[in-house]
Amino acid sequence: MDAEQLVGIRAFCPFRLVADEDLEQLGRETATSVVAAGATLFEQGDPADGVSAVLEGGVEIVTGGRVIATLGPGSLLGELSVFVPSASRTATARASSPVRMVTWRAADVRARLARHERLATSIVADMAFVLAERLDRRTQDVVSLLRAAGTRLPVSELERFRSRAVE
Image 1 (cartoon, one colour):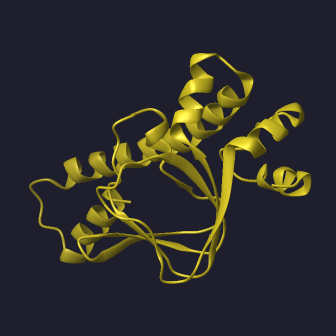
Image 2: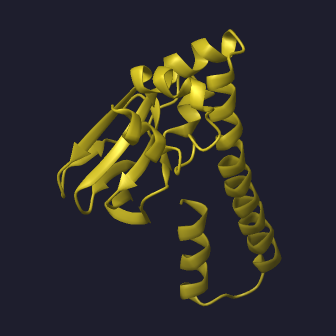
């Protein structure tokens, strides 16, 4: 990856906090890939082996034969693999258009974290914001479901809660 591309990926989580002096190392440890529209990025149940940032294109997240979310530029995939070594993919990801993404292998992140290195710390710190937002959204969904318990909700409302809960 050239210097201009490395500077460009800093616009995307989890690379926004990477210091200039760490860009070269990041370039050695990441891989940029291009996936054709309709191609599968990974299948549900596959080992989760790294964190990826979608740089261009769209990714459909599919479970049970249904698209439960559509992700675009700036979205993260596989962030839990950084923290849970035995994590597996919880859904299938399929390119809805040509996709360009950058991936940092989870083992590389964990090894750097074990050495308390700035590069890994900056990436994990950036991911913490995304994880906190997702946790807050799930908590609000659970609170909404608990409030609705015992009441009759239209199917459309139940479906809205269910779809948000599995995003």
